[in-house]
Image: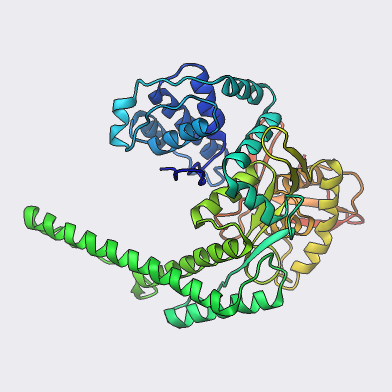
Amino acid sequence: MSVGGSGIPRLQELAYVETAAQAVAEGKTFEQIRVAVVDRAARHAWETDTVGAFNVVKWEKKRADGQEFVHSTVDVLKELMRLGWIDRRVLPSTRISASEHAHATFTMTAAGREWTELVAHRPAEGFNTLAGALMEAHPQFEGFLRLVGARPDSAANHLTIPLMRGDTGPGRDDEAYLTAFIANIVEAVRKGDLGWSAPPDAISQTLRDYVSRARRRTAERALLEEKREEKRAAKYGPRKEKVTKTVAGKPASSEGKRRQLAALCEEAAVRLAFGAAGCPVDYISHELLRRWTRFLGLANFSYYAPGPPALRLWATSMVTGTGTPAEFRRAVGPEVERAAMEAVPRVWNAERGSAAQEMYRPVWRIRAAVCWDRRINDGVFDAALTAAARGEMGDIGFRVHLDEASHGRIPSSARPLVMQTTPGHPRIYHVMRIDWADAREEVLVR
């Protein structure tokens, strides 16, 4: 469920605000609003499915189950109330209690009706208004924009959080990994240009305390679950023992625990960096904020931009003011797209050091490098690459060739390039290559 007060609500997609507002304007009940939110989530899952995993039956079941997406529906209605766009009223406190509110309806305020009309007919203006309202309602939203460089008073144009990759193997014990992780951050802070700073002692203490607390909570939950299982076994008998899966001859849980430690270290580093920079947020709030600001075209992030392993967040706009008077200047348009493509050869050559024998490069890796280099949004790069691949960019000195062949695992925070063909069907491209203008190959995509 959402956090209280002015904290960041647990809205996975800002598009749910538009969906719920439209449903309220149409006089729909809580259950009908829930179904509308499920449908919006299903559409998003279908649009972003790049591996053919979309399951129609699964989403039909979610639609029919009155307890599915209750939390998301409550969260988005709470946010509409917080923004003053619908009148306040009691909402379900649990999934089970949703049935008691199934026929409840909501009253939209004049401001809510105005915004719903605006976003329906002029979506860009509507979401700008939403962004301004979110900045007024949630200080952390404005703080996030300030830290990544999107506000006039921003002290830096990015926020970088050092991480550590490839050091989580079984040959290193947990204490050694944590010590190395702390040393890596201390050294990165010493070098500067992260958008934040903290003393070595504070870095070490903060990271160790976070990991220790998280592990203690996990152990307490495991103990509680064990006691519950003992009570269940005493009443119904022991469960049938399951065979433990193994990976490379070792218990699967060993590798899982190491990945869990790496995840805890990242969470700790994110909280440390945001707190040190003056905008304390929990890890989930930071994930939501980076997703929202990417959706709104205000900021971008990547784990895979060139340089030492790190989570990098940067502004792709300049935002002045808050609320309805807020003004947005985004890095978009033909000139920005052309500059993005002009940066590709330099990025391509820089990648040769790690992929000298490869004719093709993963689209997501080139995208991360160019977006970080030019401080642009993923969508801008994709639009530019699409135009270049179709031969619509003009003379940029090279041709772009795209291929649908897979190129290893795509990180969960990245995605391939999705292009709409002439009949309107999406085609998914995973890799790309460039050929200089004097080459004789034809453009692959038409």
